[in-house]
Length: 474
Image 1 (cartoon, rainbow, N blue to C red):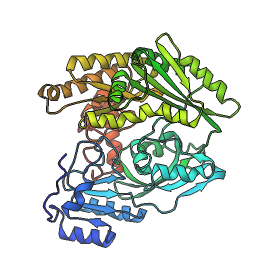
Image 2: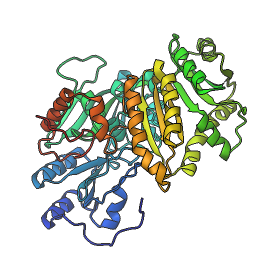
Image 3: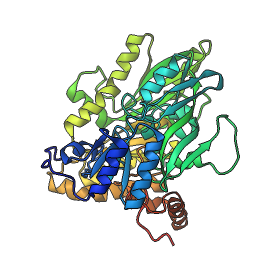
């Protein structure tokens, strides 16, 4: 990515009257100089595009007026939070307008009696967790970027994190939404109760739609009581298949862990290069397991999960007995991301998901693809729901690897679909995977989705080029 600023001239394509309307609507919460807009033209993918303006909304009504202006003027609008997404869904088309919701913060309300929170979508996941914890609750979704990612981004991508294995994704933990459709209408969806079957479920439709149907400005979120106790275990295995089989065994018994994280041998070797974490030399895979529940049952539950994790290829399953031991056991997993960034800053990161029972086949298949295409592949992720982050450690300056990248990706997606899986577990489709979507979805499904998108966004201003492939919807 080129980080040098372009010349400080007015962004092309923004008519004077439009700029004046934006200035009247947003005041000093508007950027139009290219050097100022540059930082809002990319996310955590490799894509980047210069917007003609960046608007910081503080309330719902501003969003309504902006969407209506964009409809009238035929301007593309990309909505973003803090830009932690990895698939380019918040990258605007060249010359489009960026709507940032990071300053849409209003009042965050926790309502313990109804076990819910009402939150403007500019708050971060961590801010919500801290507010809920004061009342003895938490919101289950906890993506890795929770300290900085916004709730709006969590909802737009349906980003979940490790706890989804037990508690579900944002779709299962959101009661209702306040949004602005692509046509500029205010839309309230859902209920404030845990039951409700009136009409179609527009709440779940909007969640995960990556800003293509509407702009979510507020969410009513279902809270869960904090567990009384938690236990942490680490399982070490002599080969990847043994670890994958342990995951299947753990998920087949009655106690559901609240986190079940996987690292393969390539990941462990990479961590070893940067720090000595005391792992045995024969370790080729690792599981991090967390079990939560009531104080009186937690130890028995942890032991049951521990027994399920043990098999012929297991080198040992350690149960942490103190906070210090918990920190030590997690140190290996936390060291991986910095190690990956140092080793392959231009790696390709995918987040496929398969049925848990097919994990051994997926891991075996990925090893074969790595050897066939000459690209090192590191696998880790949320094994409890079959969601594996597949990292192709690509060196784009190596002509052979650069040429092999697309065929390797295509073969990986074919493998995932053959195993009954899906192309994305939580990172979304964005711009980077949209050309592969037709492999998973039927022509009928795509026609219906395009029709829904036209109804929500009749002029096609919201995130054009995101999520769905360009197919004839007729």
